[in-house]
Amino acid sequence: MNAVAEAQEGGPELAAAANFRASLHGMFDDLVGPLGAQNPALFAGQLVILYDDAVAAAQMDAAPGAAQTAKTHSPRWCSRQVRDSSRDRASTGCMSQMKS
Figure (cartoon, rainbow, N blue to C red):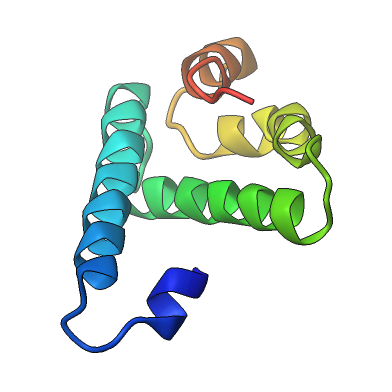
């Protein structure tokens, strides 16, 4: 975040950040696809935000457990995002892919 905020227009930091963000969004798109979400693009975007929040909390609050907290509290939310309301399927499919 700091590198992007401090980068000059057209700087290599911006290209590197854009590539990373595209890769991150692509990863979540790929993870969400097989889950049968009613709105896969929205769901993938929400997971990116969850990921970003966990990373920011870990860095800003010196809370290395932030990712685990997000992973622990997300299965119920995740299960609501898929057509098949089976919690087991959603929890296994979505959360097993998220590494802490």
